[in-house]
Length: 107
Length: 147
Image: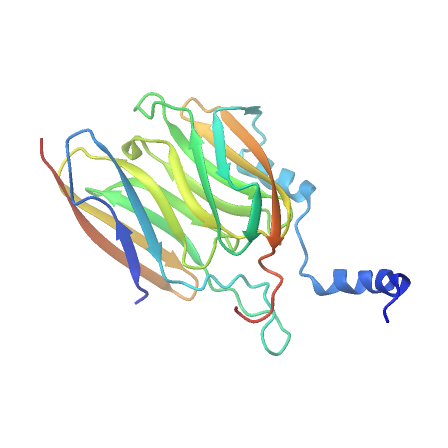
């Protein structure tokens, strides 16, 4: 399990647009860097990121080696109803991780 | 002492050590594939990035698109392409109206000073783009072992 950091408010008003910042610990090995033997190290990156709000996709991303190590993605979500925000990262070497955060929506 | 002539003679060697870089033509081709050769208009997209970058390993970048982000009129795609990294692709996002605001921030790697292109597709099927020139002092991708 890689450690993931998700910053977002725990509660919001209906219709409020909240910022969500998601970061995960990952080397994002590009496949272009030479290792100690001079040969390029094999690629090991996160390929996909997805955020779902109450089961519906808010944003998804296709990541390439040009993303920095420990990929950080910040975006916005419009709060409509209380429910979980689910974050999924998938990548090379069968990497997969899901995190969940609750959002309370109250007037 | 190294003469200027010796230095010039060593230049092709330096070029050999560096990993293959994408070219502006490859960037154009990658963008054409991504947009399925659709016409791209300039505007609507704003790129927020430092013009002079100390460290190319983690460059903060934000993309903003001018859109009300409603069910009828929203941004469906945002992508970043580069000219001179080993691969022309950086990241491709897909958005839905649930996002509420067409803005994304992330951190990217830049191999050298180059021109970045950000693209966005609105729900009416139109493509918009913006380009920015950046200067990179310490490059990513070219070092050997991890720092």
